[in-house]
Structure formats: C-alpha cells, structure tokens
Image (cartoon, rainbow, N blue to C red; front, side, top):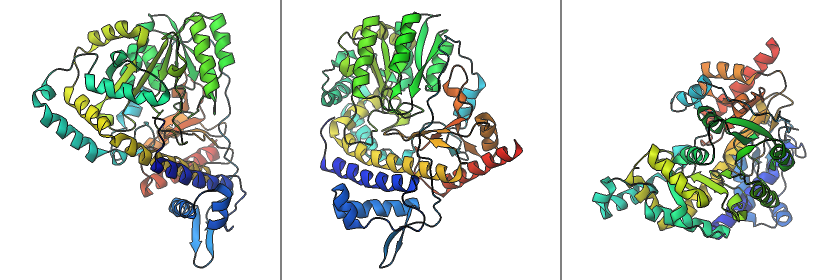
Amino acid sequence: MTVVTRAATDAFLYDQVTRHILDLVEKGTLKPGDRAPSLRGLSKQLRVSISTVNQAYAALQELGVLRVRPQSGYFVDAQVEGQQRSQPPRKTTVSRQPRKVRFGELFEEIFNVANDPEVVPLGAAVPGIELMPVKGLLRATQRAAARQPERALDYCFPPGNADLRYEIARRYVGLGLSVDPANVIITSGCSEALALSLQTVTRRGDIVAVESPTYFSVLRLIERMGLLAVEIDSDPETGLCLDALENAIETMNIKALVAVLNFSNPVGSLMPDAHKERLVGMLEQAGIPLIEDDIYGDLHFGEQRPAIGKCYDREGIVLTCSSFSKTIAPGYRIGWVIADRYRDDLLEWKQATSSAMCSLPQMAMADYLRSGEYERHLVRLRKDYRLQVDKMRFMLAQHFPKGTRISNPQGGFVLWVEMPRGIDALELLNRALREKISLTPGLMFSATRKFRNFVRINCGYPWDARIERAVVRLGELIADMTAEG
C-alpha cells in the first residue's frame, strides 16, 4: 500500500497543479479575466513537467475555470466570480450529555430516493457506477466461477472466504501492519462491520462516544440497539478533538468510541498521525475499544495512504471496519472487520445474525485483488473523485449565497456545507425533492439535531450538465428562502 507507482506520482503532481490554480481563484488572487501563470513559469515554480501543467490546465478548462485565447495563453473565465469562500465550516461546540437518538422517517426518505433515476443524486454518499471497474470485476467473477463452479454455488460460512481474507490482510502490509487473516471477518458491507462491532463491545443502555457531526447510519445503529450517544467536538480539518474526548472519558462511563480518522463523513477531516497515536494510547489506558470506520482510507488525494488507528494499537482494542463499496462494487456488499482480541465474540454475533454469505462475490473479489488491477484502478478513481470534489466546491461557491463555508477534504467524495444562519436545510431538502434533487440535511448527523443550516453534498458521480443544473437550482431555492425569510 505504500508503493508509489509512476502513474500515482503523476496523478498527484497533476492534482497539485489543479488545486494550486483553484486556490488562487477562490482566494481572489486570480480574478475573472486575469491571465493564468504560463506553462513554463508554473512548471518551474511547482517543479513539475510542462506536460503536467498542460494536462492540469486542460482539466481546468473542462471545469469552466480557465479559457484559452489563441496565441495568448490561458485566462480565468469571465463568468467566474471572485470568491472568498475557501474557508471550511466552523467548529461547532456540542453538549456533551448522553442522548437517545431518534430520527425515524428521515433515514428512509434519504435512502428511498437514492435509487430513483429521476432524482439528481446529491444526497446519499454513493459512487457513480461508471467509475467502478465493471469490466475488470466481471472478468474476475467469470474466472472465479469457471475455476470452482461448485464452490461458487455453495454456502460460504463466517468468517468468510479464506483467499479473500488473505488478500485483505496482505493489503495492510504497506501500512507496516501484520494482520492475521484469521482475525479478518467478512461482512455485508461496512455497515454490518460497524453493527457487529457495536454488538460485541456494548450492551443496551451503554454510552457510545461519536464525533460530531458523525455518519447518520452510526446514529441509527445506536438508536436501534438501545444505546446512548455522547457527541464529541471535532475540527473540520483534523477531526475528533482529543481534549474534549479526554474530558468526556473522565466524567462518563463510555463503553466505546466510533470514529472515522481518515476523511470523516460528512466533514472529510483527516486526523494527523500524532493525534491518532495519542487517541489510541488514551483509549488503551481507559480500556475503551475504538471502532474505526476506514471506508474512505484508500481514497486519499495526497501521495501517500494515511495510517489507520490500528497502526498504533498495542493492546488489540481497535476494531478496524471497511469495505469495497466506495471503491469497487457497492452491490457486491463486501466489507470486513479486523477484530483481534474481540475476534471470537464478534464471530459469534456474525454467525448468529447471518449464518452464511454469498460465495461467488467473495471469490471474485479475491481474484480481482490478486490480479493487481485494484491499485491501478485506485489511481484513476482518486483522480476522478478529486476533480469531482473540486468542481463541486467551485460551483457551490459560485451559486450558494455569500457567507457559505465549504469543507476542503483531502480524500473521499463528500462535501460538508455550512450555509448562512437562518437557512433551514430540512426545508431546503423538501423544496429540492420537489425539483427531483436530493441532498442530506445536516441535522441527520447529530443526535442533538444540530447543524440545521448545514447540508452534505455527494460528489461521487461524474460531473455533467444535469448535476450542474441541480447546483444552480439549489442556489436559486436558497435565494428564494432568504427572500421569504
């Protein structure tokens, strides 16, 4: 996982140039009509090849940021307004009191529209299938079925396909981890991995700490399991606030922490390695397990894949959960949890809730990982997600009202948007759905129903005219709400 291919390095340099120009435009350093730095000049400044700058400028043309004038060079498009909105959303202080979680129909509404082809998919955090390695995975599926047809049709009992567990364990070697395949338990996506982990380390009525805001499916799990959630402040850039967590541990009987250390959903924050090490040490001292959701870890925009909490785990208290749903195949529903000391208890929960799993998808995934195609696919996918996130940030800043603050994630494919106070995201959702546009209101990411003027925007689909029209229309709906209020 730490091996950096030539293609990966080129993609990183290309993204570096793209982000540099976007930052200059967003900060107003480059204004509409200004000439962009010359290819040769920027090549020297950023120490990249002229062809890399040329490739980035072509992409910026496609994004609508730059326009080329024959024999004159590249210029900032005249339609691009000066922007002062590159700041991330503000840190929000939450009430650190354990709460019951109640949401009800909101969850169902978000997921009900996720598969509606008539709705512009800015709500649920799902990737565009056209970005997935459809042909490569189908070839792997055919090879697996042809090689062992009887096994492909038979039961696959927990902990899952041995070849797949070996390939998953092998991918952690690049992070300096020696993962025993016996401790890898295959699940139906990351959601089941999180559910099994919570079932293993908590009992009804226990207090579970979560970062705020946090992924709403975690809150729903806590609700259905009869647990209490205590929200912990988080920073939009560095993630969970460790001092706030330490205070909560000292004053409450916390039984588990659920957190996304790499590119949190919805904020996109990336916890620094030193913070990860301190976090795991703090939890080890308190005897509190960390349920680590690392579903976005492979989708980093930087050159290196970030470390996970498990890298600093000396006592086996970290349960690392992930899946291939955001990177290869949402429909194959292949996730996993590295359980270590909790392995036997978690396996019992898995056996009790689903005594067998589909064989063929696991066999196919093992074949696909073994082929080496996954790493090449990730290079392309990270580049696509990076451009889609940049384009969405740019367009939101263009069409949302002054004072809007937008996250600037370094991985993943969701944006966390803070609109001016007084804009009710739930009302915006209701109006948007009438226009066949989905989004996710911020209050769904808080047990205390904070973040009422926030929305999460999905950037997982390739940019097209339909998505652009939806963003423009959302801006108009917000303007209408402002005028009415």
